[in-house]
Length: 52
Image (cartoon, rainbow, N blue to C red):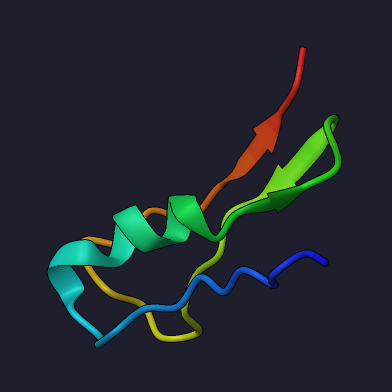
C-alpha cells in the first residue's frame, strides 16, 4: 500500500514566496502554471512554464 504525500507551507513568509510557488507548480508535461497568491507581493514572481 502506498502512503499519500502532502506538500504544505508551514507558515507564510514573503521571503519564501517564490520557493514554495515553484514547488507547488502544476503541469502536464507541455504547459505548467506556477502557484501564486491573489494578493500582489513585491517579491512574488508569477509565471507559466512551457516545455520544448
